[in-house]
Length: 179
Image (tube, rainbow, N blue to C red; front, side, top):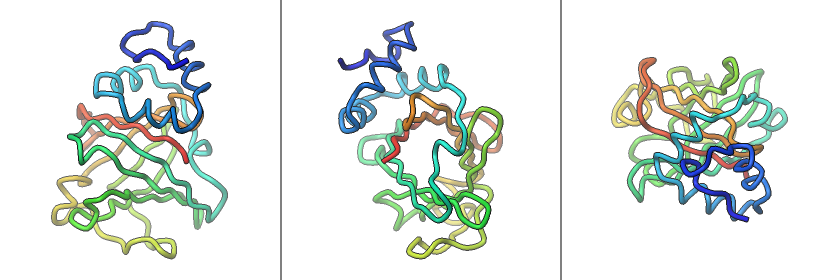
């Protein structure tokens, strides 16, 4: 059974159970069909999340398929995460990376959320990743500059995030599905 849209239910536990029961491809399709208001509701109803739920073992790359609330053509992306050298780092993979850069970030747990911090990048990258590019230069600053994405759990393997710039919330949301 497909879950109702988040804004059409007050039964979030039933919503979560229905979403969890979907096969992974149907869960991805559901995620890709959610509008900004639906993502916002999921953010507001988000559950605690630990860093361990988003990463693999040391050196393992974990891919998260993404959907944001931007215009079609700019709304699909991936975040790749890797735990290495005692920390966790990530990049964005999207079709405009050639123009705005890979959006390197570090990842940490803050309270009941996971933060993707674009203001702090690692000193080196795993083999095969794009070279480090500062997020405060060129066109990258328009996309990633002064940004922290705060992420909360929807269900196991699926999270919702909200964008914060210079410590202030923006009305931009995104979702990730662990692949």
